[in-house]
Length: 295
Image (tube, rainbow, N blue to C red):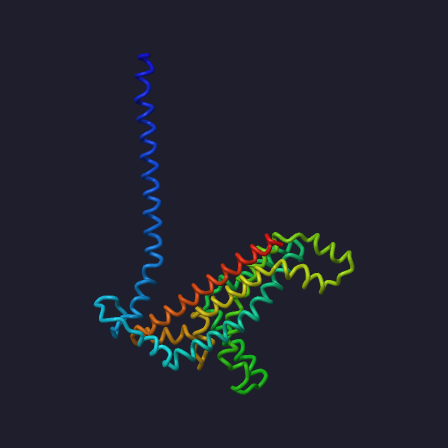
C-alpha cells in the first residue's frame, strides 16, 4: 500500500504537466496564426479604410469623415480607365496564347523520348527564370527588327504596344501554364486513349472527348493564372507597351507623382471582385459535387 501511495503523485504531476504543455503549444500556435493573418491582411484592411476617409492623402488617422468621392474620382480618371481596359484586353490575349502554348508544350513533353525530356524541360521552363526586363527589351528589339526587314509601317502590329505586350508576356506565362498541365497529366491514364483508338476513334476525337474533359480543371486554373499574371505584370510591360498604358504603368507613374485615396479605391474594387469571384467559384464547385453525388 505504501508503495502505491508513493507512486501516485508523480504520475499525477506528469499528467498535469503534459496538459499544461499542450495548452501552451495550442496557445502559441493560435497566436502565431493570428500574427500571420494580421501581417498578411492588415495592410489590405488599412488601405481599404483609406478609400473611405475624406482626406487628400491615403491615411486612416485622422478620420475626417466617411466619403465615396474617391470612387467617383477613380471612375472619372481617363488614364486609369484606359489603362484598366488595356490590361483586360492584354490579359485576354495572353490567355488565348499562353494556354494553348502551355498545353502543347506539356503534351510534347509527355510524348518525347525520355533521354531528351530533361533537356526539353529546361528549355521550355527557362523563360520563367529570365528577368522580365530582358524579355521586354528582347521582344521590343526582335519585333522592331522584323518590322524593318519587312518594311512595315508604324501602324502595323510590329509597332503596336498592345500586341507586343501580349507577345512578350505570353513568352514566360506559357511556362507557368505548362507546369499546371504537367501536374494534371501526371494523373492521366494513357490506357484511356489507347482504348478509344482501339474502338475506332480518331486522334482528334480522343483529344476533344477524352483528354480535354480530363484537363478541364487545369485549363481553368491555367487561364486564371495567365490572366492574373498578365494583369499585374510590370517589368515586361513597361518596355513593350510603348505609347500605350496599362493599369500597372499608370499606377507606377502616379506613385512617382504622389498617390491619392483614389488608388485605395481601386484596390478596394479589385479585392471585392476577387472575393466575389472566389465565392462564385466555391459555390459552383460545391454544386458540381452535389450533382455528382446525386447522379
